[in-house]
Length: 360
Image 1 (cartoon, one colour):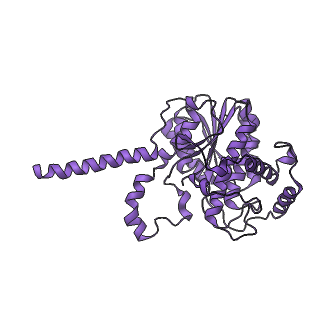
Image 2 (spheres, rainbow, N blue to C red):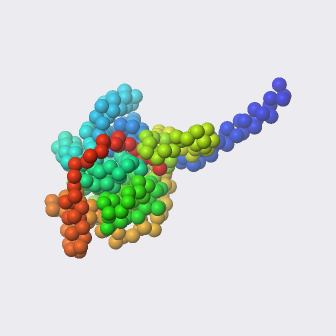
Image 3 (cartoon, one colour):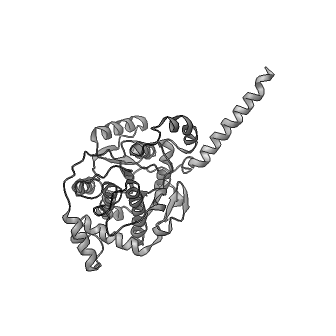
């Protein structure tokens, strides 16, 4: 029997060390035990992955949860499952296609009409490194879904958020923003060769810039807004990346990835933390790496780029003419560029990608 003691001890030590390492790398669970009874939470892309687990956790804490999803069959099934597991009957599925400004407006109108309040808005949905698809309005799919769709939705719900203050907006960003660049000359990849990786990084940088500019504009309103990188999470988001499709990556790299990649339940913890934690009260305009506040990349701190992105985004989604966004008068050349992009709106020719939740 003694000859087995050493191998068992070594195995136990290695296994225990791996568990501790993974907990350290993934950030663990939300430390707050706060409940949100009587509060309403809107979550985009909530039928799978991080979004679904975020919805489940917030429903468990007593929230009224509105799940905005493109695929209503999956969304209804997810909502039913969450109601059953949490015994919270106030979990609802609503149609929302972030690749369509028309759908975003219809969803926002429904929320404003049917909901008395919106205490938390979690802009969770996203697409990652998909082909050169276009949205219904002719925008690059990643820029359109990851940034413009959420930009429009947030602005349309601002009055409801202000009425419900103190309230919170949470934007799921990504570590990928550190290599992102906002190309104001060609936001929708009409002039240069399409690069799906750079398109994704641009959209994630836009998330952080939007967060910082929105926080500045909401000062004193009682509405806070923060961005969060949830960590590396095993979701459907990476299906276009080609990872783990080779025998080498599946057999050799998988053990290492398993230490670094967390499941959706753990991936949802940063969003839950920002949504419910008492210590987040009043905190705004910050970037979180999992549950730790960190300074984002230098280009994400560019206040002029953030202002310019806001103004261009407002025109692209049609907010400026409605008086719902910035009143400043942009340079004529930027107006012309936005008009050129706007005139190029076409009905998308490619099949719609599934809207998934954040990961890398």
